[in-house]
Structures are given as C-alpha cells and as structure tokens.
Length: 323
Image (cartoon, helix red, strand yellow):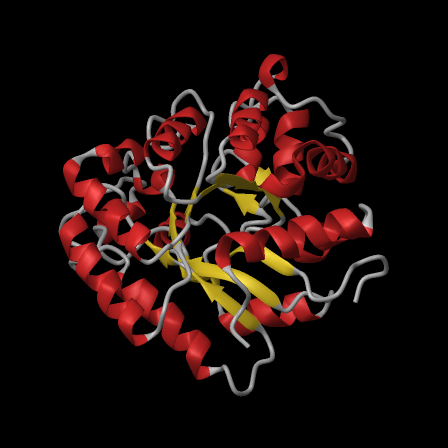
C-alpha cells in the first residue's frame, strides 16, 4: 500500500471491456480486463471498484466508428450495451473465487436509442446478476442526456427509481458538446428528486455547477481522471471550465486541487480514477498519467478526507462492494 493511503478505499469510477471506437481510430486507451484493473489497484492498496463497461458499444456501426462517426444502425448487436453489460457481469462473477477484488457494478445505457429494448435488457440482467446503479457517457456516443426528459426516457428513469439505482453521468462544459453539459444534467437532477445522481469529472471544475451539486440533496460528483483534468485546466483547454468560471485552486498541483475540492464539498465528492482513462490520447491530445499517480494524489490529502471521499460517500451512493 502507498504510504499515507487509508485502507479499504473504493475507486468510484472504473471501466472494464473493449472500446472499439478508440481501438479502430488508433486512440488510447481501448481495453481493460477485470484482472488488470484488480492487479493495478492491489499494487497500490485499492481493491474495491465501482465498475462498468467501456463507452462505445457493439450496436454502433463499425465502419462508421473507424471513420470517427457515430451511427446507431447496422452494428453487430441490436440493443445498446446488452452485450457489454452481460460481459462485464460474467467476467466479475467468473473470477470472483480467485480474485480478491470487490465490485460495485453499474449498467451502461444510451440515453436516446432503443430505450424500451434497453429497459428490458437491464431488467433481465439485474434479475440474473444484480446491478448497483447505472452509468452513461452521452458525449462519445452523441446521445443527448436531456432525452431522458422525454416520455420514453422517463420510463428508464422510472426503472432506476423502482430499484433505487443511482445514475452516474459523464459531464462536459466544452462549447462543441451538446450532449452532456453540466447544467443540462443538473436540470435532469432537479426533475427527479427521488433519484440519486453523480456527475463525473468534478463537473469539469465548473464552480457554479459544483456549488449547485452541493445544494441538491440527490446529487454528488466524482473527481475521476483528476490529474489529466488538472493539466487541461493549466492549458486552459475548452474541455474544462474557463478561468472566470473555474473552481479556484492551483491546478499545477493536483494534490492541492483535490484537497481544496474535498474541503469545499465534503460529503458530495467521490474519488475515482476513471481507469483506464487516467491517461488519454487521440489525434489532438496526449494526456499521460497512471493509476499509481492518481492514488498518490489521494494519499497526499488528510486521512479524514480520504475516508470521506473514497469510502463513506461511495457507500452512501452505491452501497458496499460485494463481499
């Protein structure tokens, strides 16, 4: 275990599986197995994970993915994430007896495509394996989060409410992203006071968004991929909030930023790495970090903060990992 790290902590944002969009485009990362995630976590003292599939799914048209386009017709599968969710749950179960890692599995979903079929798939998988919540990444699959305010989207939210499933949502502030804006997600959160929501990536350091999360009893945020988001802030990249609306801190020092967020938002913050997306590389960006470096940042803040953001809060939102 890393010096200074509390024991028994939970990584609140991780992926397992294959992302064909990233692989076919020559981007990274594009794959991670449950055993790989477990091993790199165990090497630094983390063996409990909120986990869900990668982002692109086999229902998307493969040739279009290779061209960097999203086409929801003509893929290998008909129901978004039905294959990927089952594959994840089978993998976690298969290695349960030989792998000491503990899982809090979430089911991935597409907020706009084939919602009735997704609802049926999620119900069947939950009956067979059990989910602890739901996860969506609308930006990469170009599927508007506000689709969930429609009557069809409402049925998926009704399903989540009936099972008391919290919903983890990728957040964005990029001006060219119409799919998953922080304040659109907050509109959704306020429309469903009986559902619990978590906004990923520290709301991209949008100060007003973080403050609003703090006022809403059914909202949390996670700080996944923290180090590379701090680098984006240093670079003033449009993927994070601009200086005038950014949470104030020294983004050259990710440990200081984590400390300041934990100090400001206490019970509303969940630590996570976004593994394997703690590093990211595409045609225009190369943001390098590692699982160990993410955990080193966590180990650098006071133990009381570690326990709050990396155990108490994820347990409050998702429940305890499977024994």
